[in-house]
Amino acid sequence: MAARISILGLCLGLLPASAGAEDRIVRLHAPPALTQTGLLSYILPRFSLKTQVRVEPVDDPAAADIVLGAEGRALFEGAGQVWHMSLAAPGDADAERLADWLTSDIGRRTVLGYAPEGAALFSPPAERAVAVAVVEMTGDAVLGHDVAREKCTRCHTVDDDSRMSGIGSTPSFAVLRSLADWEARFAAFYALKPHGAFMIVEGLDPLFPDDRPPPIAPVEVTLDEVAALVAYVAALPAADLGAPLVHQ
Image (cartoon, rainbow, N blue to C red; front, side, top):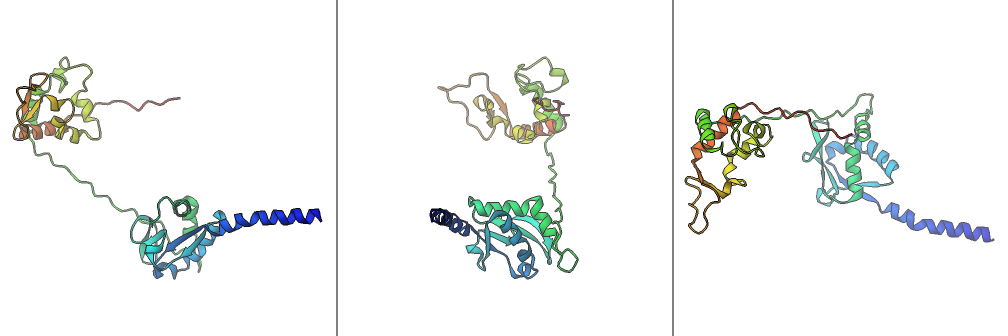
């Protein structure tokens, strides 16, 4: 009798856990063009079997945790279009788990393995060509070299002839040219520290007030000189800084 009571108590103790598992639901919306292929009926039970998370199809995308359609991250291609996934409920652990599964190797193989009549209906999404914007330098590089020699060698090495000038802790133009954001740095260098404390840009900056003079002799430039400086730096070879350090 005691053994029967213990078994009954154990079964009752398991009921809340089972009920909790049943509450783990992810609401998924997909248009008829996708659902009619039978793909979701093929892949979703496999996800649920692995994770114990039930996926419930919903007709209203506004009520869905995940939406499959034309927006979001590209997943696969078939049935006349590339299907994307958008996560409408970020932070929901179960929705994020389904999203991770759909983008994982296992999820992709499951999708690509769907072949109801012996021929796969879906394939990886075609890679889209990325348009690379070509930035045209409109400044005068020769003028930019003159500007650099006249106004920047106080702190920077700007060419081979100015190696012995500047401040040792200040990066050279060649080193700055090697940075991924070099163009943005030079195009607005006058606003970056420490330049803003002593630079005057014609037409942009007021003169320093008498009661707050610059800490060093001010440097004056025009916007044409800034554009010329950018053009000069664009033509410079970037410094070879070597491979990144590898910690062992």
